[in-house]
Image (cartoon, rainbow, N blue to C red; front, side):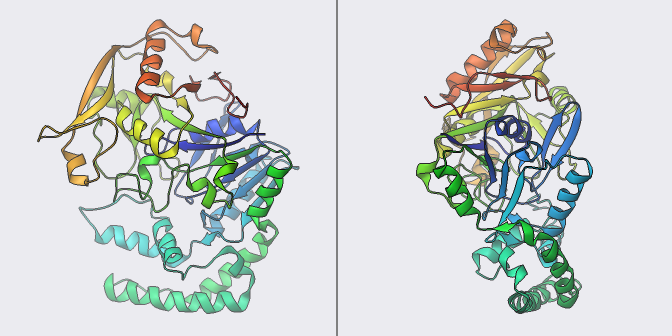
Amino acid sequence: MANVVVVGTQWGDEGKGKIVDLYAQNADVIARFQGGNNAGHTLVVKGEKTVLHLIPSGILHDHKICIIGNGVVVDPKVLLQEIEELKNRNLFPPNTKLYVSENAHIIMPYHQKIDAAREAYSAGKKIGTTGRGIGPAYEDKAARIGIRFADLFDKVLFREKLKRSTEEKNFFLTEYFKDEPLNWDSIYSEYLAYADQLKPYAADTSIIISREIKRGKKILFEGAQGSLLDIDHGTYPYVTSSNTVAGNACSGTGVGPSAIHAVVGLCKAYTTRVGEGPFVTELLDDVGEHLQEHGQEFGATTGRKRRCGWLDMVIVRQSVRVSGITGIALTKLDVLTGLDKLKLCIGYRTSKGEIYTESIPANVNSLADCQPIYEEMDGWSEDITQARSLEELPRNTRRYLERLETLADTKLQLVSVGAGREETIILKNPFSEG
């Protein structure tokens, strides 16, 4: 028995979809523990691309249990569309079960409208949200006025909570943002229709996971975004609205910390981020264009072009620490092919001479003031997509990987050398004990 958490070590977009899909082959249960449809996990199987926003990446495998945990905020319309698309493409296996926690909070139309209005109102100081209503939904959760999945199935309770919330949100929309109000009655009818379709998926998912653990089954906990978008440990305020680090796998699904045996940190061979905020290693030159073009760096959810830069080991080291990462899965190594020189950021230096090597500055202005301290290495030009062992990689590629391991003080468990499921070097199976 082994239970594994997979988290991103950067700002998300590390290629979690492919890696979770790979690991799901060895897992019995795949549980998503935070975020919403602001995340997009892209999987490429036999040349066919599938993008998932809410449903765990393990859904493509038969005889699995896929869970959307209580830490996720759910847009019912998006979830139903995703289920329908998977079924229409024959990608929802007949013996795989999907459950949504009764305690998961629901994204409502007023959350999306407030999200968009707030970003428009903050011209020049935007956070760079996806506009999906994620932040406002988590706000209502913290304020104890949110609507949960279970509430949808109680017409009286749902009507009461919706009416009260809509009245409050309409005051905010009309008086502060000078926007149009929403009609709570039409929302009520729309969401009751969603409830009828989604009721078969609702469950106490904490009990399901606990039962499977007692049976000796293997659980894979899947996060969204990356550690630097964590609301406590990320580049605040340019973060998401939930905890993205490994510790939230427990509270976001309803299991205790003793259930976790390994934490795999997803790390891209370079660094990207979507949205606003300081980015110390960002490249605005031809190398940045190379990374963007060869890495196809467009957001799976928004389609936005990702900002690209050299691999930042300061943020990776921080992520290893705060998530207790036991092994690293490196993705998109092939994108570096063709670059004569490679750089690794081993530290930051501020204009005042301060040096940061283990963590990012908490003050966002201090972070924006940081300049990267680089180590330079020779690149490679050989095609690496056919390699299935480290020995088959060029010498300079191996040197890059060895230096990464040393700087992270963590061993590699997997190296992805291409987009396809089979284009992977497996060094260790995290579900194997010892």
